[in-house]
Image (cartoon, rainbow, N blue to C red):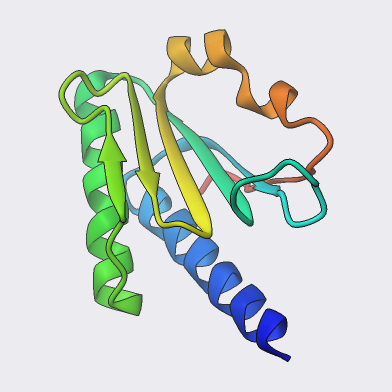
Length: 125
């Protein structure tokens, strides 16, 4: 029963992160469900892209504001805010990755974790 509660909490956090990304017009949002992957360190990766370092910084700030407002959640750790090319926000059960689009292509997390269930989130107009 406790796994169901944790799964629900992780799913709600994942949804809030996606909404925070959408608020700042993030592009190519992908959710990787890692719960069935043996070597995974969390339940979900949420990955998106921005067109500039300013937008990457804005998206990551939007995610932090939205998760704090909606779920009273703050990331355990944040990396990459100084150069805003790849901002990683570690919420323990969910890790959000906000990439400058060129860095995302280079690191290609979606391919690295190809055995995860992938959900492409439609872009909002």
